[in-house]
Amino acid sequence: MNNTGQMETGFAEVNGTRLYYEVAGEGHPLALSHSFVSNKSLWDDQFSAFAQHYKVIRYDLRGFGSSGLIQEPYSQREDLDALLKFLGIEKTFLLGISGSSVIALDFTLEHPDMVDALISVSCGLSGYQSPQEASGEWPAEWQDFYEARQQGDVPKMAEAMLRYWIDGSNPTGVALFPKELLPPRPLAERFLRIERWAEMPRGGHFAALEEPELLAEDIRAFFRPFRASILAHIEAEG
Image 1 (spheres, rainbow, N blue to C red):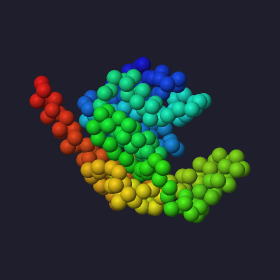
Image 2: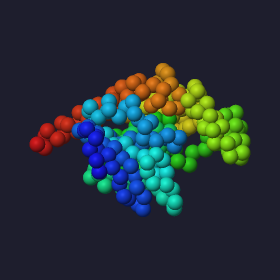
Image 3: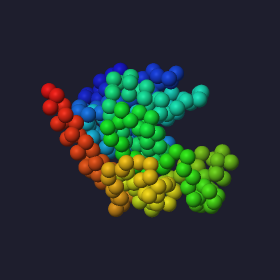
Image 4: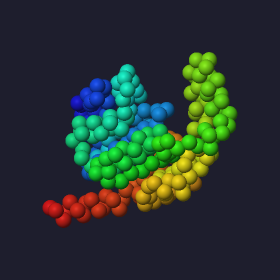
């Protein structure tokens, strides 16, 4: 464990692997989980901003960034649980984007006592099959991706995914499921108690990269009442 300025960095030896993490700021914990085509650096534009109000934790998922490789069956949800326990965090706000939003959602369902508030950006639902998956009519970028994968052409695979996720027009927001590929709002509301819907006026699937300030401000607006409630509870007990 190292302290770089006011940021703590280190590796958590948990579940037979090493998870790299960074912690900054003070206040109620806020854990950030990155997408499946990035690493912790996805949150570079939000990390220091959130640390002004919260104790922010970001980490590399197993198999990403500086964390250990995937060498055996594992669960990202169990890794997150183990990391939070390693850091002594009993309750947290939880923020996931893209694929990690599913991790965050399932983690919240399994450990409701550990999550005070959840934000899912560009999220899906475990087990949900999109219309494209059901029909097999994939967009051109996905067809290019699969062709490149068959050829072992990693740069072309990356290019196809960047064209699809970054150049796409899917609306993105806080507690919002994009219209085209992921579960629509009525389906989400059947399973989740959603406190706030916010559809971003700009940005694609990875709003954390495309519209970092816009996303950060809306996330702060979502967490603000929860933070005020927690602070009031602490003062009452004190």
